[in-house]
Length: 465
Ligand code: ARG
Image (tube, rainbow, N blue to C red; front, top):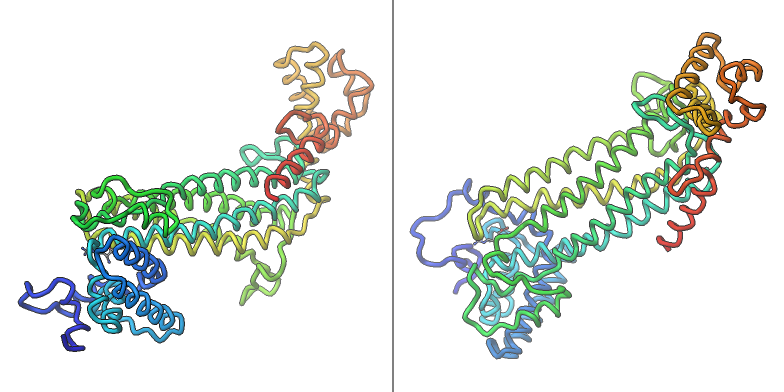
């Protein structure tokens, strides 16, 4: 075969075709521009397959040696950036195989025995994604550690807790940070679970029905570090639910990131002024000299949209596909790649930014004082002294109304006026009306009392060691 013939994709499906592809169709159907990213997985998968073929006596040991030599060369060329990717060769698989054949001759042509690009690509994507998952898990841990480190310094920092965006009850800033730690901990659990289903080997399913060669699929699985093999060949080549599941994980994680980012943006606004973010995460305005905008947080919030979009793209990609492999599946890669890139970069940058948050406790406390955040404490105080809670609620609502008219806080009502509210009010009432008293009182598992929050911090530190 001449060099020119080797370069032509027509070698992949031979002599049946009587006319060449138009340039437009070639460009439309090719994926090498983006799937060359799978090259390492593709080579690893091929080497495991070839070693198994040789062990089973399907190819010679000399063939295996030639394939290994050729692949080493290809690996080096790709790493050096000198490998020539050809659009004519459609995808990463055909590019590498054609080059292998060019380098080692017939042994290269024997590599594809008992294999199809259908099980090959499914294997490559799984191998690649597994590597990315293993790189993401430590980033989720890092994100949690950053939040815990902020929490450690702020178990006594009082923040107004909100419901309906209205001041509700005082909480500690640490408690608020730990809420996000819980979310990212669940995300990490989810990701570890997704990994189990990603880590199964499709290779050996061949085009769709399995193969007549005596393949040892378990051996290939072991070589490549898979936990097991896909048990149905039709499912093995057509299924992409592992990618969808990963995207669901990524979407939920980005949703959590987005909520945190939204709070950082709000808190940094002059109307709250609860925190400051380091200059390196902000940008100025070209027209308003006073501006410092929290661009990184805003972008993290914004980037959640594209990840949700990719999840929808993958679900839609699969929903109408009859078994088994269809070319539609080639469209799984760009959404998946972009999802991985977006989540990885977002987690990295958010963890760094969170770690460096400048907390402004006075502003937080002032805001908590403005909203009658201890009203529930007064109602609880009365209820604990025998006033039915619904009546206590009513009494306190009147007291808040009085305070509103006079522009003061509950704790600032003179003791005799507090006592006049209800016979159950005693001399000790004012201490329960302070923000700190309110915080200390919520000493229940999962509550905001500093002693509870410190216990949670200890648990997280131990877990994240
Ligand atoms: N580039 C293809 C993909 O990403 C590889 C598999 C092609 N198989 C086929 N029979 N056309 O799915």
